[in-house]
Image (cartoon, rainbow, N blue to C red; front, side, top):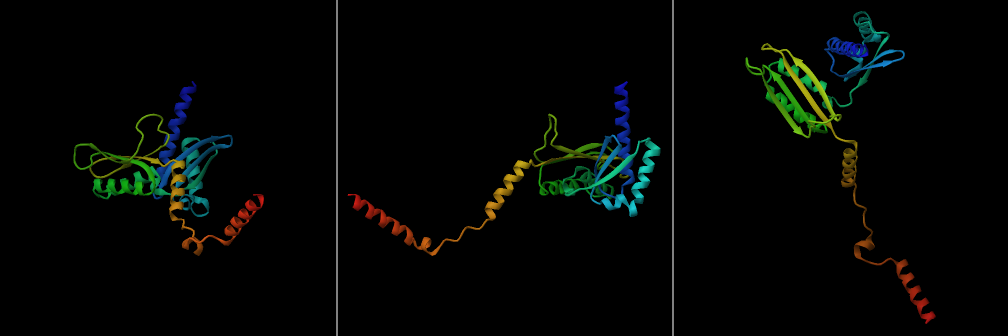
Length: 232
């Protein structure tokens, strides 16, 4: 019984995510998180433009929450927005951008290589883009663009995944994007090396340049010699 409830809830949450993506098609939305809290269902929408999702005086977001209650029977849904700092490292936004370019009729090879280099230049450790469907003819096939390191086995917790479907004239084309971000330790080491390289050298004094010994050191050496003579 519990397994059936779990499956039904997860299926409903997938439908909620698809519904929200269709509602916010004009905005670039990334990952959508759904969390169950004691007060109700909390939905976090990652986006580049939170203002467009909220709308003027919150009218748009109120209308969407009303639709969620009526359509999916969610108890007290609360929609929050979170701004994406770097859109070039979000796989969902990259997949959507590729889909929009393919729908406009651009060459898929140029588009794939362009966004691959864009992701890597943004600071990713690795990236993989898979475009599958009727790309350039009646026969469906798959094209892969990859750079850097992307895990293929194990838990793959470090791999961020994104998916979007393009709708050109020939038929639907699926775009999968996998991005691996750099580990925090690697970024810290890189920042330290960059700071050390950019740090200017301390200017030498005139005495250090000429090789002269400071007067204080010569006085100390003379005092030491006198002390040795008195002892002897």
